[in-house]
Length: 115
Length: 112
Image 1 (cartoon, chains in turn orange, brown):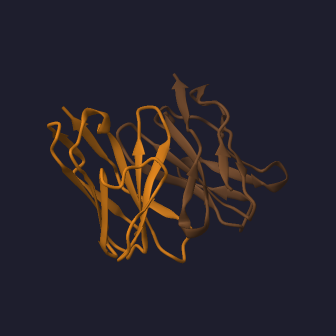
Image 2 (cartoon, helix red, strand yellow):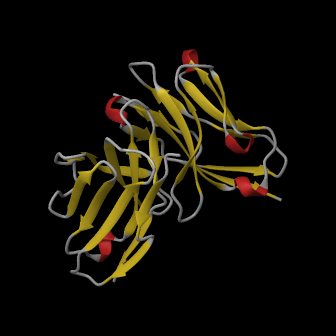
Image 3 (cartoon, chains in turn green, purple):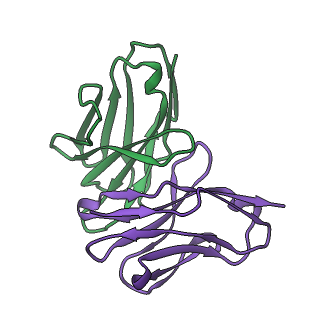
């Protein structure tokens, strides 16, 4: 149980285009979902926290208009990188949690490459 | 505020040797502590977690960790390293709202 999927696993796009990444909790309802960014050989950097049906809370320094997060249901959250640029290239990981369990379940990650 | 410190960004051990990865935490309340492993281009896999039950926690793949409140530590150990253990390891402390604070990670190399 507690499986989280991400789609796509890899995406290559041209500079200036927008990319949407989906995060799904497959076998449980996620009250909260988290989006992380990871640079090579570095730790995970929390970008934002989203609760179903409400606006995401972004960490300091993360552009809200650049990284649009939608958490429309208890099993789906999306991250849209708008007008992507090469510096947005990174590994994006989502996670999901259930209220009563102090634990996050992580997706497999999405490798974004912006040309 | 909570924080996690992982001492040693790179650790090398010989195959069959003891693995010891260090994690110290700073928390104002009893923490939830986690160890995750990450293989290249993959997400995080939970190795084990401490949630205020037994102080010695056993995880998957032969790993275990001991919660020591007096030392504010949660070091990860494995008696005998295997080649497949080579990966990146992250310690994390859980906070209210299930928010996590991650350490900077330790890259484990296993030498044949």
